Image 1 (cartoon, rainbow, N blue to C red):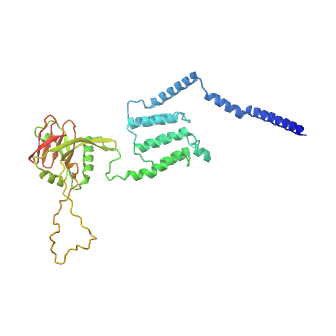
Image 2 (cartoon, helix red, strand yellow; image 1 turned 90 degrees about the vertical axis):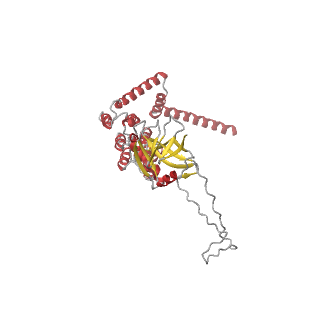
Length: 386
């Protein structure tokens, strides 16, 4: 009986195995599986096919770069290149490559802070086709190449401080839908960029001026805000006798610094240090400081124990006790730092020689002579150049 049952089970298992193999073979011959294997065969390419593909990509990149090969680097030329690409056909094949090439050349054309051009580039994306239809397409980044291109465009805007607007949001909604990754990036930008835009108390124009004189005035005024009594003075070196160069000087000094300079001993040296750097947007300005050695700080006053009731002051008569301290410490200004006392600050049009002006007197340093003497407020002071 046992042998008969085992024989029946063996025949049943063999029949099931044959049926399974037959079903698998039929499925492999179906159109779905045949297309899958064809796709896999297409992915596997020979070295010759890979070389042909790279050649086609190089040819495409050269064709895209031809839109921006004009010698006239202006906004009008950039707009013309975008219009030519948009009018070449309804399908706009190669729009991702064109947007990447445009982003790369925007700084050369001087339009990297123009919001209208960023919107014009993102408007080249096809509308409606790339909107995800279910949650799987949303999370797995439906049309990843196009979405990443839009994110890179927004990243460049964020790098250059260009804040998007509601029209940009509508362009992204029409192209990628409400739950796409570019819309998430847009939401993060609209949350953080308005907060950082007005965080600095020193307001600057959106596009920093290219004039070095205007940049110097902005930089010196910004650094002199530590003392509200500071004033800016502009001098021309041609008005100074025996001037070597014809340039301008922007100097910043307060009344407290002038008082410290008047009280400075002629036997102690004053150092001119610099140039140091300060950045205004993407522009750099070099400046110099006039610094004296730091004065020793006064000893701190004796601290009294407030909770000690054993030593109460007799204040009814208004007379001071014999052991009560009557010394008053001199208040320390913001210009007297631990590493030195800053007496003035200036920015010049040239960096080969340092020129500056302080108050009603001028101090002039020539790098050819060392040491030299500083004539400031008609008083000679020994000078060291560091």
